[in-house]
Image (cartoon, rainbow, N blue to C red):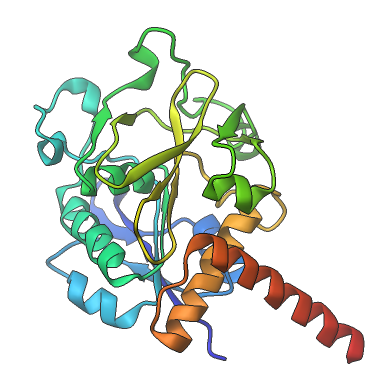
Length: 276
């Protein structure tokens, strides 16, 4: 079959202080193409260029990527401070209603880092502006120096709720992840179930309760080394299976069912290779 179209939310940048663009990191594109098995579709997150309704008609699933800019605290009823950092109101205007629309329709949605935070805010939750300033919390930000390999290195354990969606997807209660974020969940929104925590208590993995389709978010960056990382691969594989199901059936497929579908697809591919 034709690959499902996976919308990947882009971010605004300026080259040489004068040339504006919308861009998507290559590692996001590769994770969607090679692990999820989708056709990557880069989305300029700006309501002047696209609408939620158009995106819902074109795409079979969405990845909400990370980004330098943060969700504006106006969206969760708090004043902006210096600690909140930079903002991208155009992206907010696309992603927040897109999350709600996907949840209601059953389209697969996968939030990464900022996307994880967007899912919480879209459901009415709030964010801490700076995790490292909280008593007893660690610094979860990207190391300022070093190679990409060093900056995206696995840095802490994430512990999952026993028997929850992530436990079942991973087949493990604890996994190692990278960490490259400043903000984090303060209060979970309606339907937001926190299933994973870092050792300092920071929320790391969520699912949206009652969502018929794949609706997961993680605070780390699973797109890094997604093809080979044992934590990233099952997440993107299940997401891709859910998107393929939507493309074929126009019906939602829950995360755990998508995980089983991904395993079935892998077995069929191995069998086809053996018989070839």
